[in-house]
Structure formats: structure tokens, C-alpha cells
Length: 346
Image (cartoon, rainbow, N blue to C red; front, top):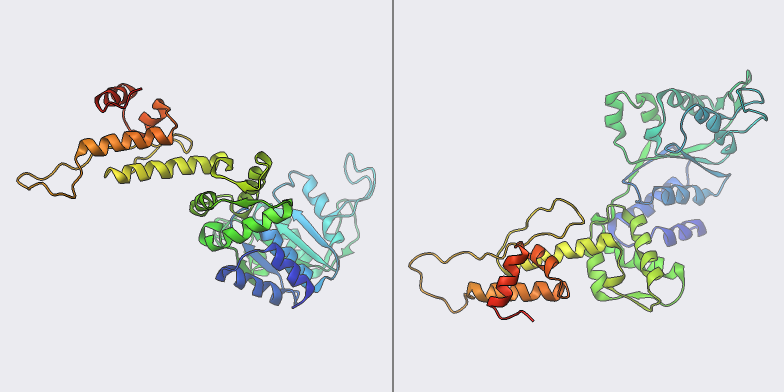
């Protein structure tokens, strides 16, 4: 195994089947100069994979072209450079990113954001290995390996006419699809330990906090997980990081999860919430017994279930009756009446 692949393994953390497959593809692609297309949601580590592919051969520079950050007429100048006096403000000659990538790799991040006119010019560079800076009458040479990444479905963009078909086929020689974190949850503990090792100290996550993190969907993927770990370390001096240290997005997830457990305990059904940050409502009603059936020892009386649900809600909300009433799906007046009825008022 090459030293550069070993370095990539430390960055692309995890032992899930999909992660191991990606590492195998990185090693194979690093030994050739074919174009590569990286597909996946934001935060799945596309740039990490691109650098891993480049580092296997370790030849030439690695230049990142962030297509989503380049806007307006300066885009062409950023890519191809310009000569002095090419436009207002062009006081000196400037080398573009593509010329800087000569002999190495150019990583086009979010290439789906590239305008059609620049797509055509990029295609010519890939085919002819030459380009013309803005305002210049002479051509320049640049030979680089292109690695492109996108969170869009480029095949659909081609059908819509927002992405050139010829450029799509030029890029899509070999593609790697990076799975979102929610589809490879077995990698989460290793990733947490990796991020904790980077901040130093002897931090560790409690079993309760890890359980919450494993059940969360992680819409921001690995990047969101890294931010979560940094947040926990920032507000807790350690060494143990607890559920209370989790950021608000996971706290909201935990509240919804607890509310669903409360509803399940009393036979209720999940209730949709208007906002992700709102406290979910709970239905404490229990099914009425069918007429003519004899009492069964395993059936708990409705009053007992209701009293238990109220006690659980108050314990979870640390005595906050307004939130407890919301979780239970009843009004505060009703809760106060129930507290008095079950002699829970203090």
C-alpha cells in the first residue's frame, strides 16, 4: 500500500462495505489519469476523495475550482486568466486556475453550477489541452487530470439542457458515488473517535449520546458530524461528552424521539409537527375495550396509563408544565386538572 493511500485512509474513516469499496477505487484511479466524476450529497467527502486520488501519484499540483463560488464575468478570468488591459481593472497579467493545474489535477467542485458557455470552453481545454486567456490572441497549453464533483444528477441536467451532453460523457469515464452518512451508520463511532483525536485531549462520548447520534439522520453528513463533535468539545471541558452537550439539531431530534416513545407507551400514533424545532404533540388516548370482553390481567387501566404518561412527561421536561402539555397533546388547563385529579400537583 502506498504511503499516500495510507494517509487517505486516515481521512476517509470507516470500515463499512461502501467505505472500503471507495478506498479500493481511489487506489485504482490514483494509478491512472482518467477523468473521474464524484457524486454525492453535500458533506459526504468528495474533496477528500479527490485529494486521495491525486495523492496516489503525487504528481504536480492539486488545484481546486469551486464552481459555486465563481459568479459573473470574472469566472472566465479565474479559470483561464487574462492579459493586462483585457478589461477594466485588469492592471496586470493573471494566470488562471487551469494553467496553475498544468501537470497535476484540477478538482472542479460542484461542476453542475458551471454556466453553459464556460462548459464549452472547458470541453475544448480537455480535448485540445490548450486555451486562450481573456483578452489574449495567443493560446497557452495546460495538461491536467480533471476530477469533477457534484451533488446534482447530471444526467437529468443534460436532459433539461443545463449541462452539455458532450462534457458529461467526457467527465463520466469513471464515477464514484459517495453514500450519505445515514446509509453507513456503522462508520459513525470511528468518525467520532477520529474527530476527537484531532482536537486533542482524552474526550469520549457517553453511550447515551452515541445512541442519539446513531439514530440521527445527519442531513449535513460527515461535515455536520465533525461540527457536532467540535460543538460538544467547545462547551464541555470533558473528559465525558454527554447528551446535554449535543447541538440543537440533535436535541430537537431527541425531543421528537422521546415524544414518540411516550406515544408508543400509551398506544398513540405519531403526530406531525409544523416545525422541526417545535415540540411534537402526543396522543395519550388508549383504545377502548370491545363490548362484551372480560377484563384481562395484562390490560392496564386507562387512568393508570394516563397518570404514567403525565409523570413521564413532567420528568422529561423537568417540571415544565407548558412543554409537558404540548408533548402530551393536551391544553395546559387540562393538564392542571389532571394533576389535581391524580394528586400530582405540588
